[in-house]
Length: 293
Image (cartoon, rainbow, N blue to C red; front, side):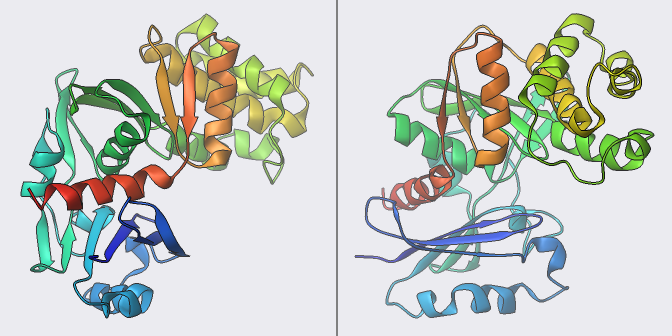
């Protein structure tokens, strides 16, 4: 059996798994070695430190998705235009070492007259489709840049990026809110969070609604300690208001974020199901299987 090493190399972290023949993780590793921490020319060494022992196994194949294929990464893997399926990804791999180490390309599409891109989420999306055994789905992948991905007939037709996580960080740390909110976020306050969701739905204008994150505390409608939860709900609520809410979605990602999205989706009466991070491993395994056709 060929050893497949699945790697999700992002901006801030490096996640790896050695897979069995069904695409399940036999062993997992994680390091704070995102691409921004790797110096110029340092990717081969970082790779060897992370999984050099795994690569010593006969016939080992490492497939890498994520920002390692960006202009700031190990080697740029050109984007593949949508619509695209597994065959398109498998045929457009960028080989670091032929037959042994390859980077999965990202995808690009046109959204509202402007280009949009993803790296890593395309692999996770195809893993989701395997997990749910379906050809059609709308997949929501929360993160710094949340991706709403539309899959039809087994291909990613289109997607839209929402900078929800990054907007939260900017407002939380670099706006007037930084002076009025507690130093740490703390645990989510569900009541305050849902107040934020509801306000976003009522206003339909984030530039106006955002100021309420200050005033609700000023007038004691939200406790100061719960203000970060309110702001989070406001921004996630704005994302859900702008995105399509007329169909069921599959929510996939880290527990901390998916919990917030699930709370908002349930509050708004939307149909959804939640999956974990194992989708990325299954997506990379599916690409490896496609290479054998």
